[in-house]
Length: 449
Image (cartoon, rainbow, N blue to C red; front, side, top):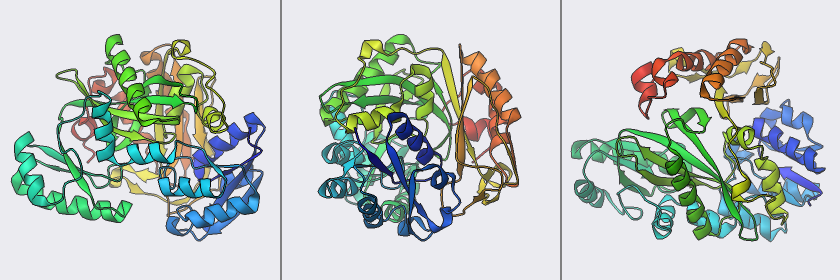
């Protein structure tokens, strides 16, 4: 096992990794920017090293600065969390060249699944259904128009090198294809340094289902069932739940087997997520992408299965075999996560940095809160607006809905606007309560564009 791990991240995920390190008796070292001097992860780690100014490009995304901190701290491994450098094969390769273990999949697996067009080809070769569309990145707009006519409008344009909704546009007809293509290309270039695009047929009535996978260096790989992440705004997830209330047992099993087949084809190890669109009308599923890292919503799976995913990321990277097989993994009840963001829903979800004047979180044996904020904390304007993740569990979905509603009612954050009122509105919405929602739910039922 490792003696000392550097955590190349910030906020709640950095604290989550610190706690996993403590559980395993490992010292934790964190990096921080000049804007994060008073951040909780700096206070909780065994050691902290400042790596640069506030902007991410000069600190958390500065691979050389992170590696320099790792060398100074004499660590055995680096855990990248999610975002920032977590899905960067070049950074993982640099870690290995410095004889520092990268806690994540291999460089080869990350390269294969990190490019969406390569991942789509990999899925097809593994026998996993994919959405009709281009086999790889499209060289120009003329070819995009030709292919769009072949598969039929509407089509969705996606960045080949990234995710999170960036570099993504919908074209409903040929008249809008050109403008959508250009804006997607510009956004992809700015976000990922790569303007390559591909297109797919737009599935219009679907649920977003993802499968949690976990593998070791010895060829063992399992899935930990699904999370339903359909409630999104502009491709950003708001609420995640497990199990999906609309899946039949046979469909759940098919999705799990498909995810494992793809991961095995890629030679994948560590934690990861295989994402699918589930067509509500045809009840068919289609592969869309792999996230080669821990997910923001991983606690939903942890509280249901009793398996600590971050702990097992570390154990796998240290060479341990998985301590369980597929048949050992059971879903126990139901769970749900609400993402709490410093945003103002009344002002088109405008980010709200500033000082938290009062912080009173909910507490219960059925409630878990992963957060990094406290009364008096100054939310910096440079990073993601996520303040924390509220997770509840129960015997079934009805109990979870009641407990989540009560937990949100008890949650007090004053000084900045948050998404708590918007989340409460979702939980009161009859379409969501009866699980009749699809990918258009937030826009159509709540008027949030």
